[in-house]
Image (cartoon, rainbow, N blue to C red):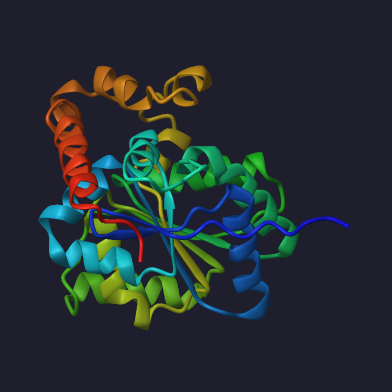
Length: 259
């Protein structure tokens, strides 16, 4: 007789609750929401996100209101370990976009891509549709619009999304804008599942190069991104990474863990 394995407890790190789920478990949750007509809001966190959450209570609250928050960074795994918790899995949008597209195509569910500079999401959508024949890209829209709730541009974008009723909405504005936008507009969006994806569209459209797999799989993606975009990301990593470790050690000293 096989022994059942108890699920790992959720992890709390710098005030954010994180689900210790595998990639397959997250994808199954998405498939279930799509097949049942449920609604599922998914976010992810890396060290940068947790630094922002420690400084911005509204952002922390938005993350904690998501249905699922998964680990997207080796620093977060390290932080969990330093505080006596476990996050065995880490995956980032470029790692799972093809598997998501495959499952959406096979299940007859569409995608809507929202974010990046004008033309980038459209290009990324075309590439994904070509890569996965039969996949429906219900629509695309860039991320350069007035995101203020109730603004004319924001209402227009939401109307465009709701008109095509996509199964999955991918939002790539960068943190914390993408999470805050989804949190504010989620009740009025006619989609089953939504995920925040950061710079995914730039990677798919090859607007920004991504480091080789051996780099990303060994905890050095932050260094590769720093070398590619030092001006934009210098402070995030050179100041943010030590600050994240300092904050995590403070949590450890206070003896704070998941509830």
